[in-house]
Length: 76
Image (cartoon, rainbow, N blue to C red; front, side, top):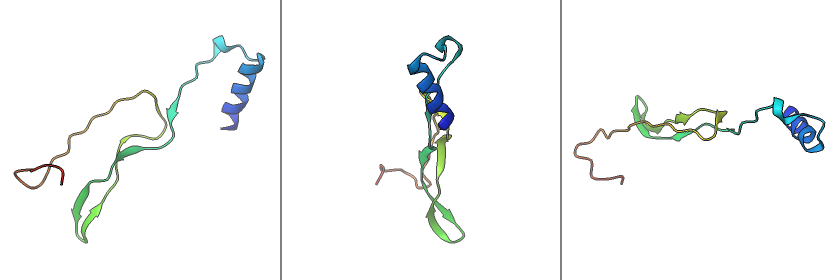
């Protein structure tokens, strides 16, 4: 973080040539869902990351989730 702040300050001040740099925006946290899963110890929430930490923005990911009960009557 300190390196990024120093580069940004140099760009604002004009001491760093911005033609030599490519700055990207990243997502600092993993983003995902926590579906309810069955385990040996009963039902529990398990985090399932879709977008990993430090992924560049914009990004797009997709994953299909299914229900173990048929027929699925909605997200209740």
